[in-house]
Amino acid sequence: MLKEPESMDECAFFTRRILDDNTKLVAWVPTGTNIVNIKYACGNCKKSGEITQEFQKPITFICQNCGCKIVVEPLNKRRGRRKKKSK
Image 1 (cartoon, helix red, strand yellow):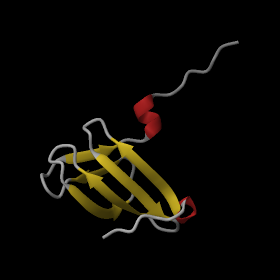
Image 2 (cartoon, rainbow, N blue to C red):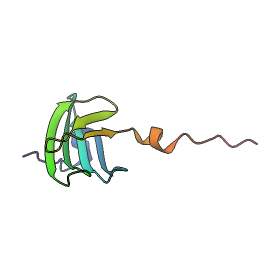
Image 3 (cartoon, rainbow, N blue to C red):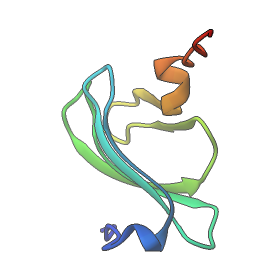
Image 4 (spheres, helix red, strand yellow):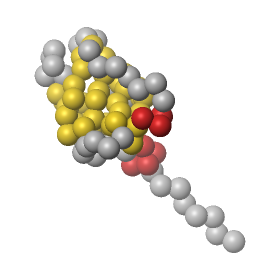
């Protein structure tokens, strides 16, 4: 069972999200590693799981229960870039 970090100081990366397909997840990379820990509840089968894998963006993994592919896009890509205001 993965233990979530107690402080952001322990993480090089951290996110807690609800994705468009209703998948809920928490993902973090401990400081000094390139390994992402993921705790999730799949939006397709509604079952929970945990995965540890190499950290790459976008974070992509397969639900261990139903085989659904889950992709966690970077937030700036999902929301689009802001336009600079012209003077």
